[in-house]
Image (cartoon, rainbow, N blue to C red):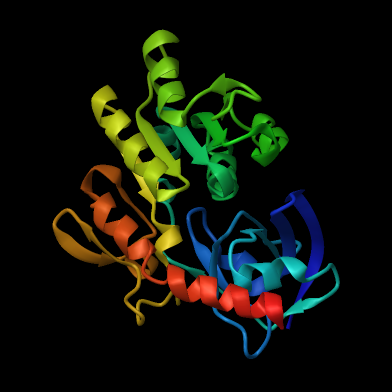
Amino acid sequence: MYRILSKEMLSPAICRMRVHAPRVAASAHPGQFLIVRVDEHGERIPLTISDFDPVEGSVTIVTQKIGASTKEICALEEGEFFEDVVGPLGLPSDFVDKTDDELKASRYIFIAGGVGTAPVYPQVKYLKSRGAYVDVIIGAKTADLLIYKDEMSALCDHLYICTDDGSEGFKGMVTGLLEKVVLEDGNNYTQAVAIGPMIMMKFATLTARKLGLPIVVSLNTLMVDGTGMCGACRVTVAGKTRFACVEGPEFNGYDVDFDEAMRRQGMFRNEEIEEDHKCKIR
């Protein structure tokens, strides 16, 4: 059993939990994920690790209430328990293997969309601890859906805010802000990283290509069972079939077949809607 040490609602539909999981915390790296189960009958839910503290033995997860299982997770309170927390799973971000000199010579720009901002945080935290230069763009539909603003601002070199409706920061899409930051503001970067909705990562990649900027994307939203056995996270990368959960979740954005990935992402939508409806009438 894994006790919930703290819980807070970042928005009406997004909750952040700190969970006691010492072995996971001791082995975790940026870019990896874990799997939680609410109870013995619960669905296995893969969630990217949003932070980890080996000394305290805790990991932080951020969950958005979308379907039946994520609503069950967010319904848990501080002091209650998860039946299982399994991890860390997946491959760490590739910058973990770089030398301090390589990272100090790097300039990163992160493009974070919605709840994708949460897994960006440990990456920025790690890179800054190693001496890299890091700017961050956080995008959301409206200002009340922006998360991790204060935490990110305290870490990165420059934080840029973007909302679809202009309720805070730049009005428009993250791709438009990325172009402004590079072309109008004159910032040069050696690496971009985009984490968020699949459609956002697709267009962030197209924009990065136009800017001549290498980009890494995280396909964590494709994962279902998190072990490669279900096959739900199959995606074509550089013309080959890859499994996001065991060979990723991060890949070179230029190599990802985003259209196929988005089709695969919608495969279980009807089943999820049906299960959510059942939960409402129970």
